[in-house]
Picture 1 (cartoon, rainbow, N blue to C red):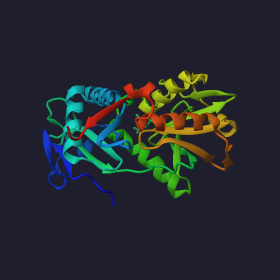
Picture 2 (picture 1 turned 30 degrees about the vertical axis):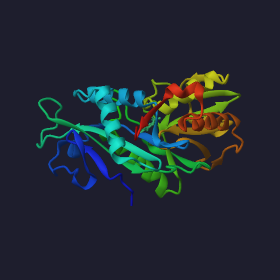
Picture 3 (picture 1 turned 45 degrees about the vertical axis):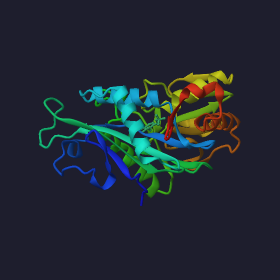
Picture 4 (picture 1 turned 60 degrees about the vertical axis):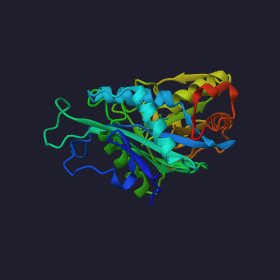
Length: 305
Ligand SMILES: Cc1ncc(COP(=O)(O)O)c(C=O)c1O
């Protein structure tokens, strides 16, 4: 059972989590017409009265853009100010995952995005490691990542997660930890809730934004960090067979952080991952507020003045 934070942001204010409830007739529940964010909030290991948020501005921007793709307005400032109030009310004392969610809150049955009420909520839960930091086994999913011409993949649209759910369960039920999805052109896209990287001959490679990926904030950060660390990077289409012979394969995401891939289908991958190790160490230091060069990636929320 998840340990939820005691207050949710609901109807424009913080209310006890148990009171933040919606009707069975809520439009988004039936049609997947919502969009969410996912952020980690970490008590500063050096100062328990301060909460650290990794790239909060980017998360707010993506959520605001996701709302726009659902034809509703949700400003970045509105999101950030609600998150600040939410954190000051909850005062988390362990690492938590925040789930802001914008959705069609109307009661009614016509699938549509016009003439409809929307609302915005936030809740949080304690979250340690979503995937084992030691590494995961992956199955190539029989499900295919959706195409941008079917739904707006630049947004974290809740309805899109039916494919992630099918792929994850298929992988787990067949003895794997995670699923890798190809896109409709047969190229590697991403995992059920993470982006994918591989290293070949010293070059860090990831499928480009034209490969039906979610434009991950961790992915963008890994690419930017790698460049700053002198690691050559390439965004290009990736073939399935490349994964089996890559020097390193790893996943990136807010929940998964940086997670190595140990095995794909029946192929064991290399166990030395110097490039991933260097990036993971740097990213951990940044998220814990220990890297002054990247302090601009960290938003610090004071819980007490
Ligand atoms: C489908 C999918 N891809 C990739 C990611 C990674 O994105 P981020 O690094 O912004 O968390 C996520 C998680 O948000 C996701 O749900």
